[in-house]
Length: 302
Image (cartoon, rainbow, N blue to C red; front, side, top):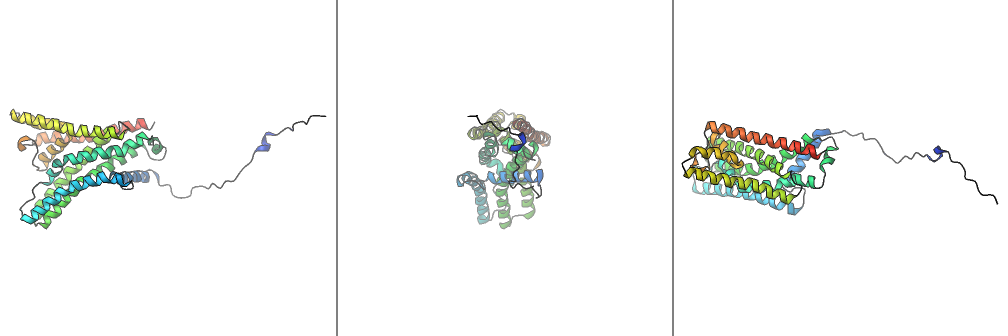
């Protein structure tokens, strides 16, 4: 019985073209600006737990209430006693509440960037029209905006309360404006430092501990050294020591140029000459933090 011979197959015989329904995208392409705004808004919402689980809202909302509660109490006291002025200057409020601010930065800076590093989603951002500068600017601006909301809200409570208490409108408006300038600088500085520290590790817990350590230990060390210098009559050294802590930097700028009463030992802040150095160091740290973040994410996105 003869064996069946295989039939020769021409290579092109198995080729098929299937129409599976793909269509061209005809809608507008929104581009980098839209992506940057979206990343900013989502990161800002995330800083207060909006759009996330209920558990994620507890700490930021609690810290917001803790920031505003003393201001509300001060206003109530001022109205009830018919005081001639508020118990605390606008420029001093954030300095007094710096522990709450540091805790907020420590909790939200890692939340903003550490998860992207841990789950390796940063390269996915850069696979779209968004670039490294867009990512860094959106994250920096969102955390700085969240901090400004946290620190400016109690000042607004103080200002509205002062007007209700019929305190001098011009003085209160001037003080409120000075306070806003002070907390704007503080927000930029703390956001930059917090993001730089948090971007070093993908572990959120390590990021929280590192941010708390840098902000609180530096303030404690500087305050101790300033007290020692004051006791030893080294009043000139007190101002220069204040350059080595973020919160004392803001305190020095506010005392030198915004008419604030300094929290330095003896209540003597830097003069105008020393204050100029404080401003330069503060702006240098803000610019340096932005530069470090750019270099960090240029490496991550490769």
